[in-house]
Length: 515
View (tube, rainbow, N blue to C red):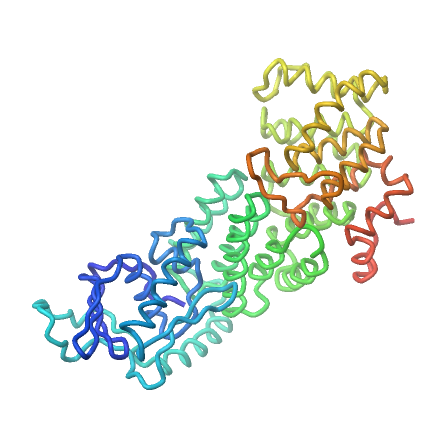
């Protein structure tokens, strides 16, 4: 854990690291036999950041904040710097230090067992340096063992007496980060991450801050190309674990770990994290929101609705309102879903997600004529081209008429689109099921979930990843896919995805299997 996160070489003191003396401003390492080596700016920053941790683990996220100004940094960029540091450790630093990798978390600097402790140099060797180190600057590793014990004791005191006590500036940053995250946009998500990094830098023992940072990483990890998604997941897990180290059972740390796991195949693990979060904060809106979404994804929309009804913060954000409406629809509470859609539209006129949800629920919920009227009504409609409006109307008319020629026309483009992106494949499954074209619905589902027949890329971009563990499952439990659930092939699909085992192990049942 970094005590003073940002590493600015012009402000760092000289230091002794085993047999080495480091001069941050000159980016130079000098060994006690006179050998010296100039290192790259970023390499010196990372070495100092690791040394400042006093032997503690430094996460990749902390390194990014300390040495890359908090920017999103690729795994390769950090790996390159660590590789260069290891070359230094094998070269001029031999007998002084080594870099230990903590899998999926970060790194730790270890002193050679025969090397002296790290400190500020008492009598710097002759190097031509004329400006003495300032006595007010921090010394590295001063009382390292005592510091570790103090940190443990301090964490216990923090959990016992000051849990939730934060500086006013930290509270302001947390609130601002929440507002940005609620926008549910790529830009808002990364701005929220930046603010929460600042939060944990300002108050490094703030468990909830680390948990919220983990959540901020975890949410977009499911919706990015796989390399970035995996990096975000690793950072979410590191931040979540840090929250739990500071405050065992912390709801936000548990949420971070639960949200970070893949969508498919990890439902039980997510349940366990969310159950612990609920035990810690049973009435917290954030906990309730994420638990409710999990219920929707495993076919328990009726349970999700009960949680949404307990949420105190109103109005819901557009994204949360959309999920609530979806839960009501899947739970068969159509009148309430209609009222919720009307309320959401009055609060967020022309908001695209809400508008399309209203269209799809009407079309896939047995009211295609109402969907047509909705698409053709310009009032409250987001900006759409004439071709886009015509396409939506054609879909709804095909669903209404069940005319084979109309169905063939609208399905052709969506079956082609299913080969281009996960989003289009999801829609093709819904549309094929609603049109009664179940062979096509199951064929696309086989490709989407298992890569059978063809592979479905995550995004419609060249060389897009294929992340089958991140595929959506809530569409399998929507009213529009009821024809699939009534088909004998659905049981085999559910078995192959892993739901049958999950429901058995968790002792739960989805709404469609309840009496």
